Image 1 (cartoon, rainbow, N blue to C red):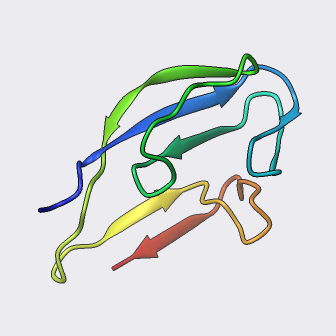
Image 2 (spheres, rainbow, N blue to C red; image 1 turned 90 degrees about the horizontal axis):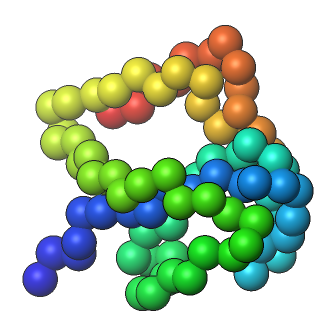
Length: 84
């Protein structure tokens, strides 16, 4: 069966290190999908902003990402990235 197409949208309330050892800075946002965890209990340093629907593109579609996240995990403000 296809995996559920939802993810949790989270924001760091203050700087902390998550369960996987990744440093999260105040205001940083990220998604937690089913592939990350079957069940997820937010940390006291995380705020759940909502549940978002995952968008999957076909081979004939593309999208433009504004302020993409770089390989270092930081947003590249003012940049655009085309994804096919």
